[in-house]
Structure formats: structure tokens, C-alpha cells
Length: 257
Length: 257
Image (tube, rainbow over all chains, first blue to last red; front, side):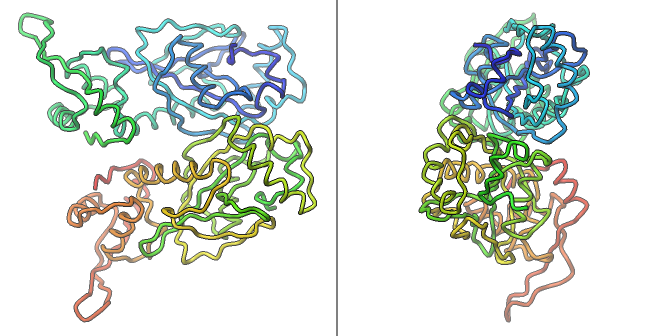
């Protein structure tokens, strides 16, 4: 069942939790680019992050995983809840505009719908390697695209703020959790992991200091293998040390680059 | 208006946001002790953190500040949202028990109340100096007390988990934000701030390394004043550098003790 479609069943209080939405800022990384997956509903000019509602039979985490799965086909992504957003004015205005999407789709929300009233968004971010993903529009979306985090289109609701806060949380968390695992090939070079961290943090990291801190953390391991990428360029390959990596993911570490 | 009282008005959908609660883990520090403020509703054996509901005219942050104000009389406390909790089973069982508190107070929740259905808690933590606070029970509470974080009483709902997660968030945030400001006298000694950090982190911090990192961050400043606490003990006093402190609070720093 598609929790991200606009559907009359959302107004059924037996099925869905009123006043609560889940938004999932899906970040994608590939080759020095950090992007975010955005959707534009039918008949709308502005964009939203991937979002949906919460069925009464599921947890908010399950709802967020489900949203990521519906849009990317991927399960078990690194998923982190970073903040909830709730105030009287965050969605009202844009929902009045978006009603057109409902009506054109033959769905008439009740005039006293909570959607036009007070809506709390529980926001998550997740990470994926965008070149490996084929994205899947929702039935009421006109577009679903990866946008560079530094050049976002006009956003609905408070979704520009939600992305900004997600990015802040990601940039904080990357110092504490080895969240690069899913974004790199299984065997990677030091320049590759260095680029990943620089791109996510949006700043230059001293090469030697970065390598020293990363190696001393023990979460990556040098292999006895090289990759040939040119006559004079044959960098060593590295991989994550699964055991140390898992412990770091569970307990946190500090990668003080 | 007291948002933390159990009151028939909570069931009024015109006033309150259904399915949404706010919980505020109020930490108190004093002299090497870290405590948390807990309340025990009338006729109950188990305890809860300070909590309440969200009026449709206020933001979730306003609701959390209001809860802190009602229980401690303090405004403008350091307040941080750290996670929301939502799943089908987190509150149901204990709410069935707690109904007694309603009924004994002459308030009969409707049989189909959302309180017995699905409830999302948006959780915050806040910090205060507990020796300076006189706490104020809610009208439906039998007790409101400071408990040591290491020795909690039996907790209702998932509130033991909420406290555990709040403590994790506090211990993470203390590396990034100078949140000791409100917990120390305006002029303090190095042993005082050292004890504060050790107590919150629940571990020993090397004295010299701690002092060096703290001084190099620039957020505290040595004064030309001493405090006489004995014949051979006259430690220098320090204070926060307000400007650097505010910048660190806004942008984050890293206090890598």
C-alpha cells in the first residue's frame, strides 16, 4: 500500500493517525555530488520532500522506511530521525493550493480535514548512492527528481527548512557515525572516501589529517590490492572493517577531522 | 492555562491536536549530581516525565517551554528537541491503568479517545540548576520529584526509553554546544566546570586535557579574581565569554575533551 499517494483513505481516522505526517529527506551521493530527492505534485509549481502518513498499525520509523522504499525501491537504508516540526501555520497556505491536486484526481478532502488544520511532521533523513537507484513517482506526482542540495527549487510548506535541518543533522552525525558505508563501493580508494566526506560536509578537509584520523579510528582497513587507473596512478584499495564499523554505528565514535 | 493537567478539554478537537503529546525531560544539575524531574499521577505507582498536549494555537516548542514553566516556574531554559516516539503500543496499556486518575477526578474520557489509541510523543530535554528551583505539581499529580538519572523509579509508557535517549542526546550535544551556562554560578572555578562535564558525561575527564581544550575554545575567560575556600585553596574564577558562547551556541563548536 502506497502511503505517499494522496488518497481519500487518509481522511479515515480508523486507518491513519490524524495530524501526523512523516517526511523523509532522501539524500543521494555520487561522485562529489550531494543531492536530495524531491517530488512535485500534479498541477503544482513547488516541490516537497518525500512524505506520507502513518498507519495506526505501524511505527513512525516504519512509515519513514516505507516512504524511502516506495520512492527508491530500497530497504534497510540508514535512516535517522532528526526533528519534528509543528506549528499552526506551517502547512495551511500550501495545502489550500494543493487541494487542486486532490480535486483533479477525483478526491475531495472533507472541508474540515485536519490537513487544512494542524499538521506535525516527523522528519527523517536517509542516505543512498543515487546513481544506483531508479526512482518511482507517486501516483499523484508530476515529477520526482534529484536536486543538488546547494540549488533547490521553490519548496512547499516549510520543506526548505526541513532540508536545511536535515543537512545540519547529517553534517553533525557524520562525525559520530560511519555513515559512508552505503555510499561507496565495497572496495574504495582514499581519495574516494575523502571526497565523500568533503562533499557531505561542504568543506575542504586536510588530506593527511583526514587519513590519519580515519585510519586511527580503525573503521577502515588497507587491502593488499590496487586499482589501476592510469600509467602512474594505482592507488591502494580500502574497505570498512565490519566489526569496528558496526560497533561505531551502535555506540558512536568521534572522527575529529 | 495548565497544559499538563488531565482535563476534559484535551478531548476537545477544536482546542488540542489529537494524537500528539509533548514530553519534556527536565534535567537538573547541582554539585556533581544529575537528576531528572518526574511526576507520579494520582493513584499510580509508576512515574512519568513532565508532559502535556499541544494547543492548536501554539508550536510544539511553545508547548514544551510551557511544560517546563509550569513545573519549574522558569522561562527561556535551554530546550532541545531530540526525537519523537510513535508506535501502536507505546501508551495503550498504561493509559488503561491511568484512566482511574481521570475518573477519580471526575473526568470521563470518551470511550473512543485517541489517548487509548495512537499517541505520538515529541520529546525535548531541558536543563536547570535544581537547587534554585521550587517545583510545582500539576493538579492531577500526587508527586513531583527530582530523581538521580542512575536510579530511576518504575516508569510508565516508554518513558524509561525517552529518558535514556534524552541522556544520549545531552551527552552528544554537550560536545557541540556550551550548555553549561545555566548550570553554573556566573563566576565559577575550573573544578566546578570540570565536575559539571564529568557528571553529565558520566565519566572521568583528564584534568589538564579538559582545561586546555576548554581554554582554547575561547568560550570561558580567566578573571583577575580568586575565591577563598581555605588556607591553601584560592582558585581563580572564570566566566563565560558571552560573545563566543553565543556564537558557539548558534553554530556549534567541538569541545573534544
